[in-house]
Amino acid sequence: MQGDKTCPRCGQIIPRGEGDCPYCANPIPLNLRRETTLLLSLIFLGVVFAFTAVIVRAYKRQQLALGGHWYTRGEAAMKAGSPQEALVDFRTALRHSPDNSAYQLRFAQALIDAGKLDEARIYLIRLWQTNPADGQVNLELARVAERRDNVPQVVNYFHNAIDGVWPANDEQQHLTLRERLCRYLIQQNHRPEALAELAALAAQAPNSPRVLTRVGGLSLQVPDYAMALKQFRRSLHLDAKQPLAWEGAGKAAFAQGDYHEARYFLSHASQEGNSEAARLLETTDTILQINPFDTKLPMAVRRRRVQIAFARALDRLQECATTLHVSLTAPTSPSSKQDQPTTTSSPLEKVYAEAVALKPKVTERSLSQNPDLMNSVMNLVFNIEQISAQQCGPPHGMDLALSLLATQNGGSP
Image (cartoon, rainbow, N blue to C red; front, side, top):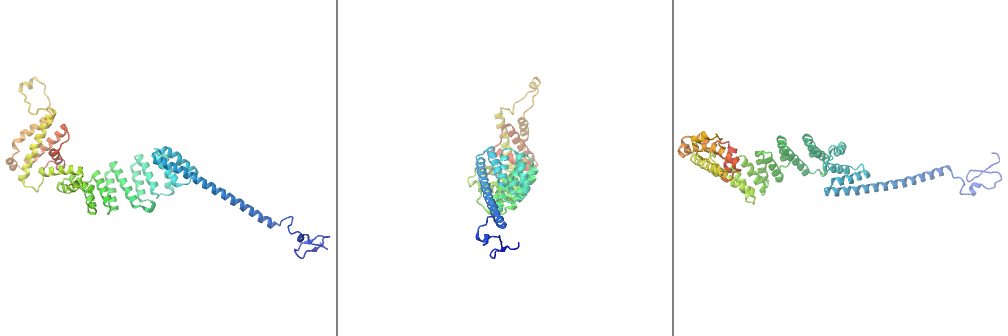
């Protein structure tokens, strides 16, 4: 505007009638500049956001603390054997920390222990979809399948767990899982699958005598005595100070009818105070003393053993008849047969009649002249032992040895 003066200091127009610039004379203006207002607004918003962040972090810390508190309570309930109580605690922990995978896994484990398999599987499948290689999740899915008697799923999830990821990649964990799978398959009578897993387990731990001993023990349960003996030998080669391995090798050799080798292993086991091995060793020694099937012995010795076995079987038969109050030699006259109804003779009487008929031929001379007669005599001995066991209970001593020879040799000397 014409006539107005401009302040040389700030550049503002000095109103008419004013001598000095009112702006420079008043350092604090009544209206702040637009830039200053904007800056102050930004500062205010920053303070608000910072305050909100502090509140949010505090809330999250509180939620995490509460989740940890309830999780700890759930762990205590699980250790106390109260999965139902633990479920409440773990569920509360998940409300505070819904994305915590450790809480989800533990909650699923509590569901399994409480028998709520469907709900447990839902949680576990979610975890599995997130990380299919998680070993623990696959193991829990195997537990669910085991409770449902779903053998294919059990095997599948166990394999996933064995090949899965575990903390620190613990090799011992992999061995333990495969061993558990072997025991499960044996329990379910899946013999071929169990043998395959046992072979894999033995290959996975070639230098662990303890693991090889357990593999041998599981092979005895299958049973596969040849495999069991192989694993026990490998174990003893690595560490001979294993009474269980000596005993297991003795049992495996005994079951295969190799009594000389069985005696070698069992004698070592019995020296360590193993009562079961000592009992089996006693039976082994008895078999070795009476066994007429040993082709390394002279024929005269084998014939003599056939005679001893026949005499013992006849005694066993008579002892059994006495216990049952059965008369093996009760005479029957023709008149009594006509006056009384026909009765069926007992198995003891029948086999006794066979023994009486054969007894005159069980001599050194007859056996030497007719080698095939040895087969007939021993078959009758085995038949007597079998019938006596059925009628009078399990055999002992020499009778037990003869029964085992019958089972393992098929009655052919």
